[in-house]
Image (cartoon, rainbow over all chains, first blue to last red; front, side):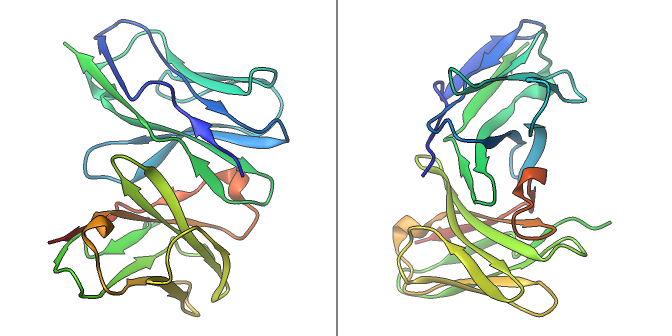
Length: 112
Length: 115
């Protein structure tokens, strides 16, 4: 089974500063990679995903993530964060035709 | 189109009781998965249903069970509640099995508190 490690449980960052949320997974077999965001008292929303092709994927609100197969990582980055980005972020991995495995989450707090 | 609907949003139960949670997937979605979310453990997979059949099961005791109806709506049941069952229970739907590549659509969850 896969394991997903989100190295930072909490990340405080000042508004307009860059941020990186780290995610590593265990298996090197073919995988699909996802980032989900959860706002307070809500379910998870898909932020972006890597299925194949270009290793750099982007979301509509300025986040991007890069798939690094050799390091089995899928770190999430944003060059300039906004207050509204304060939320819990979950990295998830799915092997082809199998269930999802989620990391334990990273709480991003943007400080004004 | 309507999203994934989970009811109720909040529940308070006493140890030893049982509880039933409901999930209505997005129209046309036939696969429903359930997850337990707790601060220490993150999201833990409970089970997945497709065409009224349980297709995958996570590592939870038999007190946790579920079912899916012909209209794809799903229920999960927890019997003999324990304090440790307090969690946010999330339902996620997808079009079919093995389309996990497209990602789930999650409901807002049911917050269960066991006292």
